[in-house]
Image (cartoon, rainbow, N blue to C red; front, side, top):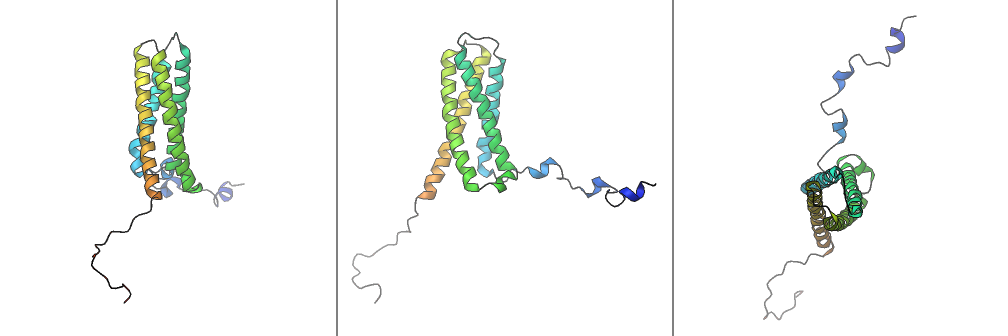
Length: 182
């Protein structure tokens, strides 16, 4: 029995030739939906990762509660920022309601910024003054500030959308006494 008859109908002769330049994983990844958020999302991701890495370098501590809390928060901040980037940059965004994505991003950014700032403050008061700890809480402060700054920008946009636009003022003459419909 010859194998050519069995596989001829279903097997491509040259499978690589039909593929375009964006046929791999890159075809599913786009930065177009981030628009102006790119300048906040990527620094949040990088700074929270750097804070987590610097915290992981710490080999010993005397008051470890602040270090452990900072470890949890920095790792969570990194994973949440990565999650939001994945949602915005993949087809997942099309499968979820856009209002829910923006609302989730709004509250995740607020919560992460506040808790990261709190963890950085606690870690500042409980560290052992090593260079790894200092760099970790500096990156933590910077990351929390980027989260909070993006939240303020999202809040301003949200408030501007809710505020009804006033019609343009037209100059009125105070001496007009005749009605408009005459």
